[in-house]
Length: 426
Image (tube, rainbow, N blue to C red; front, side, top):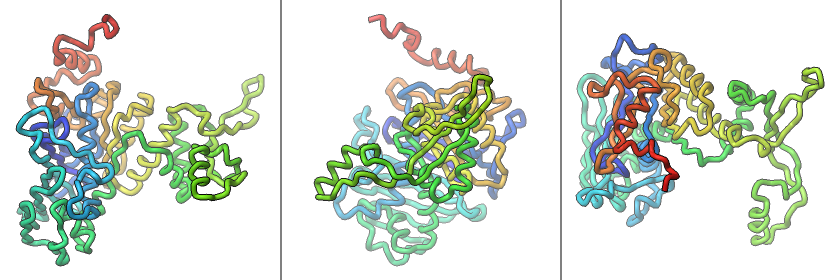
């Protein structure tokens, strides 16, 4: 489980900023499902991040995506390859300060695997890893596993499987150790592989794979989610059918690719097709049959739910970690409330975690939906540097815990109340 995340000199975060899923004890807070680790550490399973557009919410999610990719894939980099050439790596320092724009970005992450608490930290620029340290704690005392300063790597209590010499200046040592067969490194590697960051520019292909490989369990989940979204959908199906080639998605692009390789264009092809079934009524209001619609005939909202469904299903079922950017981009407030309450009520022994950003303030009712320590805000200072605030922090004004007062707080913070100005006045 994820415990803490710290970032410094990364995108809009100039100074060290800590995001934590440690539960803060408060008898007045909403009762939610919390996972208890050893050493009296209680971990939250859900958390929400607020504030206005361009405050830096998405950058926080980009940081976890960058950490994940560097750990799981930096072993692929050959000598001299820039780090940012890895797919899905967003690597930029804070560029609005003269002393930070050429300094390395810094990341620290604390997590739990099999009751062992790990603390992993590293810093890097575009071409090399500057530092890298790994610690673990099974009891009260934390021990050093390995330390790194540029290419000087010292192993204290870690099985690197004799792979130190294979670490280039642009590889994380942990990534190389996992690739070369270190059992403990492979376990940590797997933990980060099972972190999903959802930015809404993915396609429903993963939901399609779920419908193919886990039809009997995924379809009822998807159907229930669509029904709760109140989309008047009676049923949904994903089946293999023969259709004309020109009805394939992006058929013209595919046609050009096939012709360039001298591959004949078939008249018909077999393809998996989404069908969404809506009820058909007679004049007396009785359902007499169901009509099948292509998913392309459905709204963008329906398609976004299809896009999101696989990740929620997979994370809850296999106890993984999911970050969702702007979850309210697809979900109605009532469905979002239903989901959050379901996350909070889920089996106390389950290990999944879901963290999302949103502009939806209808879920800010801390008496029934969220605890203070589940709510975070990202704001920018006068130098345009982002920082995180937690509603449970002592310096947060506790009266701003309702939707109405949240907007008052936002407008109070914004200089000159620019959000209230007539945007079309000029």
